[in-house]
Figure 1 (cartoon, rainbow, N blue to C red):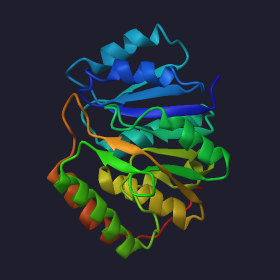
Figure 2 (tube, rainbow, N blue to C red):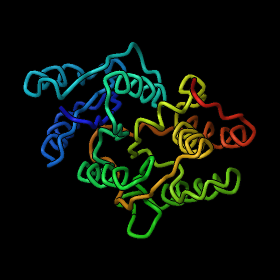
Figure 3 (spheres, rainbow, N blue to C red):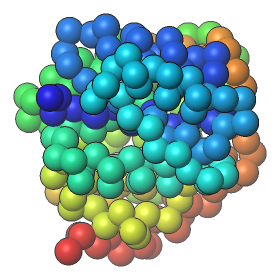
Figure 4 (cartoon, rainbow, N blue to C red):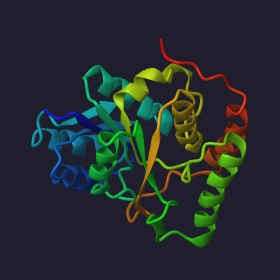
Length: 240
């Protein structure tokens, strides 16, 4: 039995999903995986189900109808993992932009006392590889903008590679999370901090995907831009 669950949302990730599953299971720390698949038409779910026979009890799938968004996929995964008693719950992309080796370091940061650990591109030792400069600048200045509005003091506010201690996810009212794209990543960090939880940024190298298509869109970017302004005035409720 593992105390750690890696939640990986998928939509059309047939080129990546088997490789990412095998890589996570090759690590020295025993981790379980939950794939949250939004009815990928390319057969991603079928690949996962085949692998489940090879990794019984460690690999799981949650299938949802239609493309419902990153934030709702993670929230569904959080509920699934909390209900099964996992202590450490991770967010990670399927496309190897997040190095699975860093899962161990994020977990160690939480064991050492952080309430949630962030795989950060913008602290000392972190970097971005194989991204066009305009996207690097957009991402970096997005974090600058977030800190100007929300005063979070986190260098990589939009990071999507994270480890939460279960206590954080139990305290956040997940039913009150309002955003689904980049703004979801910001909202989760902001509410965790407002509830008194401590973050630790762990330097990582972020690498652009080699296979499949990016899910980034102008709509997601706009949601983040306007969502940050809304967050500044939103009440933060602790879950009952």
